[in-house]
Amino acid sequence: MATAKRAPAGAAVLRVDITKAIRDAVMAELAEVGYGRLSIEAVARRAGVGKTAIYRRWNNKLEMVLEIVSDVAGRSVPLPDTGSFAGDLQLLLMIVSRALQHRIASQIIPDLMAEASRNPQIAETLQKALRTHQQAVGEQLIGQAVSRGELPPGTDPDLAVDLLLGPLYWRLAVARTPLPGGYLDKMIVVVTAALKAAN
Image 1: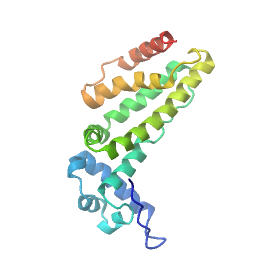
Image 2 (image 1 turned 45 degrees about the horizontal axis):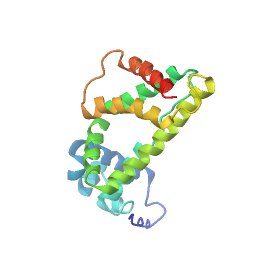
Image 3 (image 1 turned 120 degrees about the vertical axis):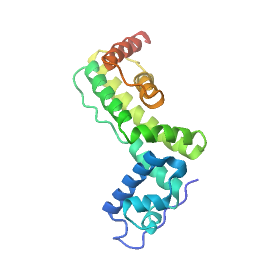
Image 4 (image 1 turned 180 degrees about the vertical axis):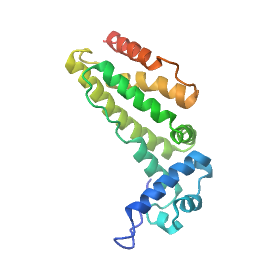
């Protein structure tokens, strides 16, 4: 059960620039040493702040990491209407593949997945943030395709997101295998065919 955050001692205590420095430091520490070896002291040192600046914002390491990682995981992917389902898929797959190959994300994601298997709070937080985000992406992506007549009504948005993101996560975050040329284009063809066949 989450504990209440400590109240700041004054209006100027929770400065935005300090909070950003701490958040950046947490992500960098997670990428470098992992959750298990991450410490408040190291985060404070990297952020150039005292430990009290961190404890004014979070009560402990777990609370700090959960809030920051949840915020990052739940950030919305910009998905404008490109005019076609294939175009929308291409944009989404490009964004996700680049994100999974980012030097910090590629270190943090496998580590947090391992921690999630040992810590129910981490597992629940990650699942909630990711599922909420995935549902929003799926509903917009499939909704646009159905309204254009590219996919039949009743196409499952959750299934679509699983089909799209599962292979990318497996190759880039688990197997750490580079994507061969034309891989994303083939995925678009296969996923579109699968979604049409499922109805």
